Length: 80
Image 1 (tube, rainbow, N blue to C red):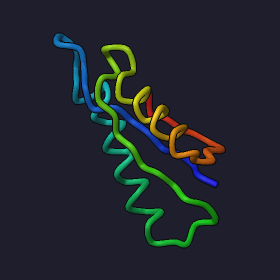
Image 2 (image 1 turned 45 degrees about the vertical axis):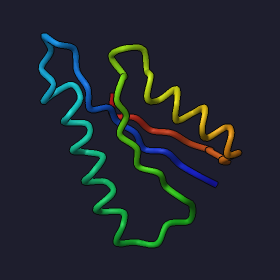
Image 3 (image 1 turned 180 degrees about the vertical axis):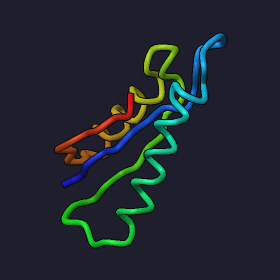
Image 4 (image 1 turned 60 degrees about the horizontal axis):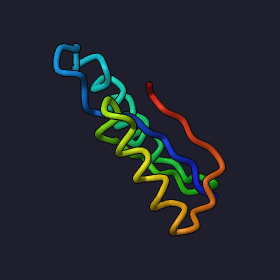
């Protein structure tokens, strides 16, 4: 059983990248730090993707690889 917590770290050229979505990546890293100190009942993958603004490229590649690896992903959260 695998849960995925994700964010993206790219932004549009004229966008406030520190807010969209570097702040989400900071939250992802803090969640990983806090949860790492406690046993978890399932595997948690913390993933920060690129290419979100260009059509979810990093996320799509992650899903492709997860399917090929037959990961049993039962939940996903994103900071978008």
